[in-house]
Length: 224
Image 1: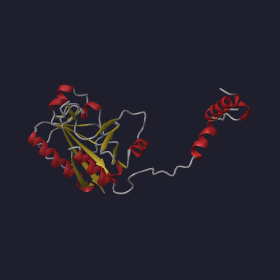
Image 2 (image 1 turned 180 degrees about the vertical axis):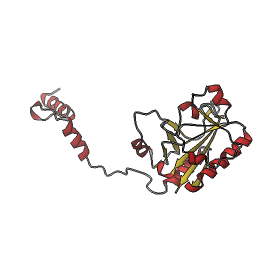
Image 3 (image 1 turned 120 degrees about the vertical axis):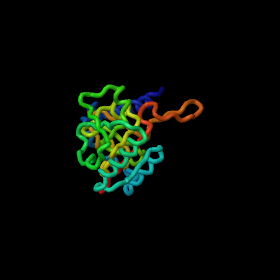
C-alpha cells in the first residue's frame, strides 16, 4: 500500500471517529448538534388523517371484531358485548383495578364481575368468560393495541389466559405509526403488543387460534 493511500484511509477513519486536526475529538454535544443539523426531507409519517378509520380497518383484517362507538354510548356498548358473550360462554368477567367505573355503569344484573385482588390463579382465569381492559396506545398503521399494564389494564396474565378480551381504545389513543406510538410510551414499563386474536399456523399453514392468548378479541373505539 502506498503512503498516499494509507494516509487517505487513516484520514477517513479519523473523520468517521469524529476527530479534527491535531487529534482533537469532538464532544458529544458537538456530535449531537451535527446530527440535529442533518437535513431530513423524508416523509416522517405515512398517515396524517383518518387514522382512527385506518386502525379499525387494520384490526378487522386480523379477524377481530371492531366497533366505533360514541363516547356517550360506550357503557351501553360494553354492556351489550358482555351480555352476548355471557350468553355464549357463561361465567364472570375479570376487570382490572383502575378500569373506569362509567364503562360498567350499564351492565345488566346477570353480568358477574370478578376482581384480580388477590391475583387469580391461572386455572381461575381460564374458567372466566373474559376480561375487560383499556389500553395505553394503539397503532393505526399496523392495527396493533399496546398495553403497558397500568391502571385499567391489569397484569399480563389477565389478557393472555381468558378466551375473550374486550378492549376499549379511545380515539385520542390511536397513533399513526409505531414511531408515534413508542414516543407516547414509558420505556420503563412492560409492554404487550396485541395484533388481533392469538393465532398461529403449522407447516401446512393451518390456522389455529387461541394458542398464546384469547381466541376472541373485541375492540370498542370510543370517539367524541
